[in-house]
Image 1 (cartoon, rainbow, N blue to C red):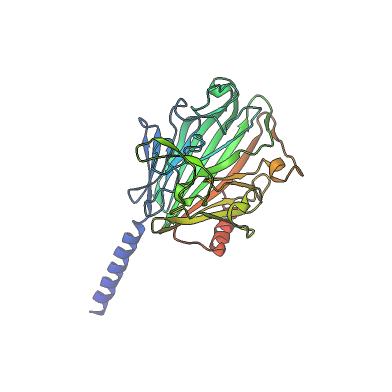
Image 2: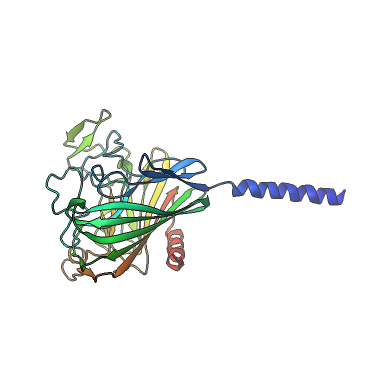
Length: 349
């Protein structure tokens, strides 16, 4: 009888273990026709690697991005507009990495809204190297070319990017590891403001503002608004150095956390820099209107002209940028973010 009881307990324990292991399963679903790779957690959307034709979008992105409860934290405009969103900066889509001045070509601001794109660069998706799903963790590796003259000229940089997706309970993490390799000529990243790793967040996660702007209504019609309705606008930046609100712009820090609420859900979106990155800890190009970016290469404007970088790569030379984004359904502490930053710093990828 005693042996039977032990056997039953062991069996129940084993079943419960197998049930627990079935949670947080991450799948990568390639959809060639839609030019995207869906990232699902337990069958529900987390994000998608989106690489449409460059007549639609001038760079690959992760879009949209959702919390563990299924709430979208990225702005929908211009691909999936929602009522009440701003319609500025159509090149701000989801999560991306590019730069304003690469050998004089602007990869950051390029979009279909630009009429003369001869001095604008395009990042073209070139291949899927690896897709590995799994429990709690999955890997996606892709390649791209940074091509000048709106994607019709020379290839300045070859890009290899590894995305590592993590899922555990109420938290989702995206690690982006991007290696850029100069091709036949020297590449100069001029010291400018607009760059480099960025997210454009949902309206609710913006900081309240009283400035006039243009918004989209429920029918997709753009309307100029003289006075903003700040109902439900709850965003607030907080940096690892203790700086709060829009004052984080141009400051340096190991991480910045953007917290707020969408409906009744507390949400935290934190970007963590990596010690191996250029100019660590990075400068933050984080704006109250929803642009949340880290720019390690733009020292001049952020330091009020005390420093100037103009980062260069010799032909065939490479540089790697590593960033971790932590999306939490709920609130996070500085201590927990410091722990995640420490773990990220020790990671081998």
